Length: 335
Image (cartoon, rainbow, N blue to C red; front, side):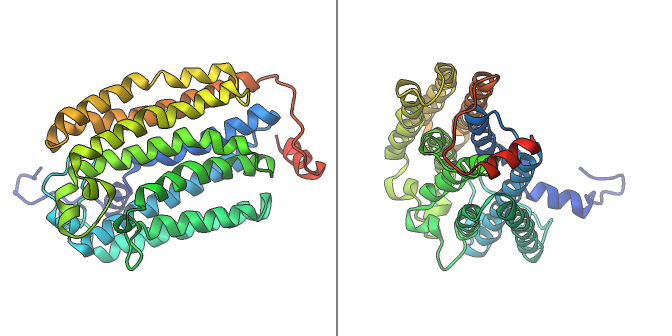
């Protein structure tokens, strides 16, 4: 849009920086924190709001840092410049550098600032909850930064999808549970799996539109390695049995309430994503509904799991956690 003098309207710098963060995708980090905290509440009737909010802000900042770092290093590699098939807002990055709205240096500085602030919150939580969080946090930060950053570039080595599943599935669910309870139980891993598989599916379907550009610059993710047609089958597996089985297992083995089965309702959205991927795997523009339905599936599954755990944890007798009383008592006093 232009003003009467036909000069481009310049948005304030802070607005551009906020847009660079790609906040609509922060559901990917909010959902696992909510699931982990809700599971802790189901087991203990503890919900420490200050620690929950700190964990939430911390992982959102790490997520933002990873988003922005990905833009910076995709610019350096020429990936975003070569990408002509991206579909906004799902793929192709923020385009801030490509549209000359932010300089590469500003984008890198924003990424490092987000990582620094998220890490500072993480250090505080380590002091409040325990040293296990330090290991989880270091893995998360390094995984987020080196997803595209050379010389490691995890995505080019064919393990980027796995790392994202861990960083935005397993680690934050376990970490959020630990922040509330100061212990880790194997059930946290089981409940993290639906979140992990679905966040990996979001990354996976987004790579369909980026296929040509990724292939051109040697970004050898699994969509590039397999091709889009075979990758549609991988997406189908991620969007069906992979996330559904852990939920059913939690109920069958009585480590979660029967109400958790409501989290299977988003299978309808997942089915639409799968159907669209098979029909239009080679047509980037027509794939947009699959991108959207995959994001909706992830969000809906996480919210429904959390709701079921909170509802069934309300008034539930607190389970013994098998740890010394002081950490739990201190958490209860904070609650």
